Amino acid sequence: MNDIKLKTFKRTYASGGGMYSLDIYLAVYNVENLQTGIYKYQPISNSLLFKKEIADLDDFIVTSRYCEKTGNYQKIENLLPSVLFIFTNNFTRPRLKYSELSLLLAFVDCGALLQNLSLMTAALSLHFCIWAGFKKTSSEKVLGLDGIQNHVIMTALLGGKNV
Image 1 (cartoon, rainbow, N blue to C red):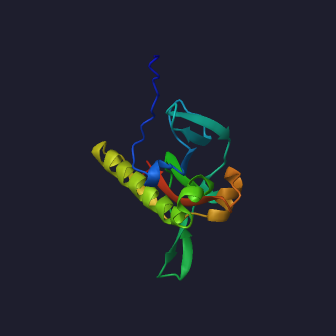
Image 2 (image 1 turned 90 degrees about the horizontal axis):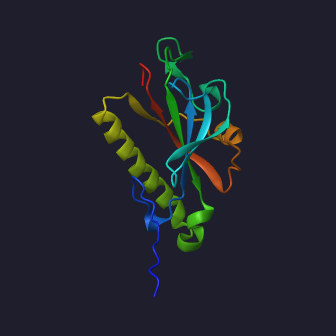
Image 3 (image 1 turned 60 degrees about the vertical axis):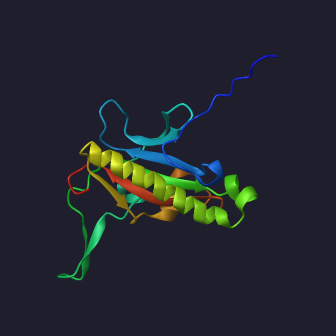
């Protein structure tokens, strides 16, 4: 009898039912030896797939804050992260197994992944910030997501002074 060896792929976070419905995109701005643009993380090969060039953060996140003194929104000075992580979820993967629970599992999975990134970047003394001020519709348009089965659910910033 031949021994069949199955290759397993490990991930750095737990996922409800092992469905791994999250996809991770990186908007890279200032990383040595890496072209500015959008990349999709490929977990099986632990690599980045270049998708397209980009100009700035404005299509993805809110880059201004409300100022109580003036009553206006003001551009956040020096908000120049090296990488913007964009976490998306594909609801078709877990839906057959978990139905409506798949939405909750997506947020739990994203929280577990963000916790691991937060711990890792703290250990490496890197600037990291979970950034809930993302522009869902325009981000999905840039990434080519339909906003029905595939959604942007969170972003995070890595690098920069104000992160």
